[in-house]
Length: 517
Image (tube, rainbow, N blue to C red):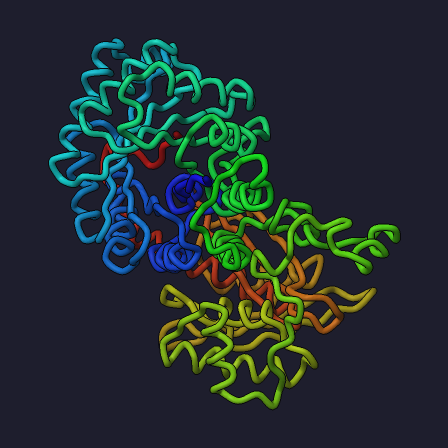
């Protein structure tokens, strides 16, 4: 009989630690709602004590997202646990997730504690967390490099103290599948009370083995895997949720396990996270990459046309890709537009719907065919989650083969307008240098990425930029039939984020900004 594996999604906590992948509170809420539609079992919404912003995000998700359990991470200290519960208390199914390192290298160089002190701290943390709620997860940070007998001692003690889930992280992505599977199997054999908890695996991807290690843990008896959408996360990232889930779905003959995931929401989840973080999914990424269901070789194309299973082990529709993505045109009305957005899982306020529909009609007048991806890009481009300090009102760019690219830009700022012109080595450079003259905000351009939303010469172009300021990175995104316009919109959106969050940033003194499990 199949056993159900719990999916613990940490996109909003561990995943957001990807360099340049941070999200604001409203964006985190949007991702959390999509994760609920995906039907993950647990959403780790953040690390509440790390900053006021993270606390508010966890609190908001706990208040507004129903279905999955909502978890908050905390160190094995009373202050962290108190702060986590302040945010989590609003959740219907709260989970306190506490951790402490168990490897000697962490004990000696980071914690500067003895094994006995760490064991006592772990037990005390679990007992204290248990006074707030029943669902308690404990993680032994850097478990893979821990002494096995000591790890067993810690696991047994925290289960006795009330931990309902015990997580075994490969914090630095060091393990290989046979080794990690053996570790899980030996813990099950050695720890006498192990059946009183759910054993979990949390694998990092430094050697490209996070998904393989997670699947090895499942085969060895783990009942939960911790993962992120698109595999985003610190350094080389985490185990990718979509790969784990589809591996279990595609090979029931090997694993004999199921999940509660609504796989038809996988692609939409991937796209949303990519759009909000600015972390582009590589074309050949398994499951959700642009080429995952594409065939170029003639022999492959012939085989797929005759029978899809010759070269496709999964149905593209299973992850939410549609065979026919054309949905609307210039004659489509507001009701059809709104209905299609609902089908795509997009819910807007009346004002945001008005803006998105107006933009849709503009695009539909110029573009013969409007696809689902176009609609998602339009909504992302028009609906802003933060106030606009600057808004693009007018732009005129001149370029020629032998001439000097020139840009004239007018921005609206508050009740006033800013107007200037400038030159650059190319059209985009001219636009950005002109905007820089208008907006007196110190920053540097970290990254600039262009991609088409769909195929064809009339495709919407999508631009993602990342701006750096004081060690922080701000992501902006713009979409337009004109790539220069998309570039300007993305740049201004990133600048608006920089201005907004720089004004709001008030980190708690002494609080950790991030943690890796």
